[in-house]
Length: 85
Image 1: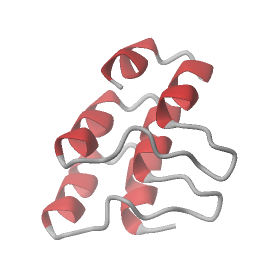
Image 2 (image 1 turned 45 degrees about the vertical axis):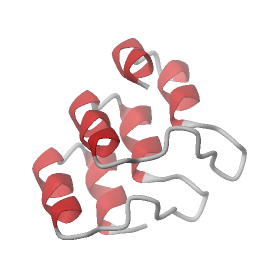
Image 3 (image 1 turned 60 degrees about the horizontal axis):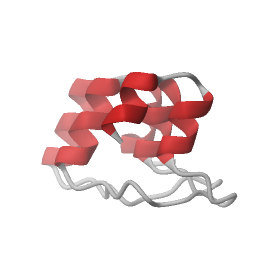
């Protein structure tokens, strides 16, 4: 996983913002195909989801099982994130 994916997964918005400002690859995927947006959505981090979307993160990218960030947010009950996506 990349530093951006780890920051998104852990809820570190300031770190994610800095990495994006420094040119981190927003489309990078972890071993299972998840992007930073998948991880932020799965964990309900609305601020990071919003940040990633502002930087152009694609919302329709599926992981290796074709799960999108929206599907992860919905499964975990993060309705605010699901509405944003």
